[in-house]
Image (cartoon, rainbow, N blue to C red; front, side):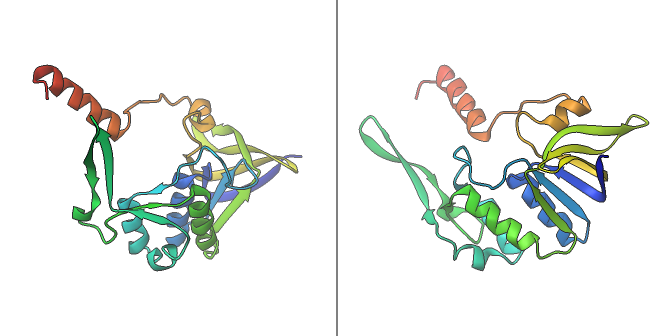
Length: 202
């Protein structure tokens, strides 16, 4: 027999997007289950930068003071070497945010911190070693997900399914959604600079 659960929202993927979405929903009183396929958050590929906009959100959520007590480093500007000259690339001190810097912190520490606080809400559940392998349908509508767990297969029915399971999303593929690539902000900036350089060499 396949074990079944019922919730308002199920989130596939326990990365920054999934954990943050789960936190915000649980904070609003929405029952939510986040499924993470690994046993922990410790992954070498994870990033280590917490941007000022994220730090501003942490402040708005009342978590910033405790968050900044975690081991981290701060960078208020970035510099690069061009033709043996050190030049400023980014200056964060002019930003209209409370934290005018990038915080360097291993992403697993960020996820552990955020999930620990999310678990304080009774409507939040984080299930580790639960890998989403399929979505369920009824009348051409997504009704939940199927997950592979150490105890066997699990089906979770939900009013809302969020696919936060990365660039190779199982939810996206199984739901038949078409991916649209927008590229990163820095890639778009470099494209603009390259086009301007062709028009007028710098």
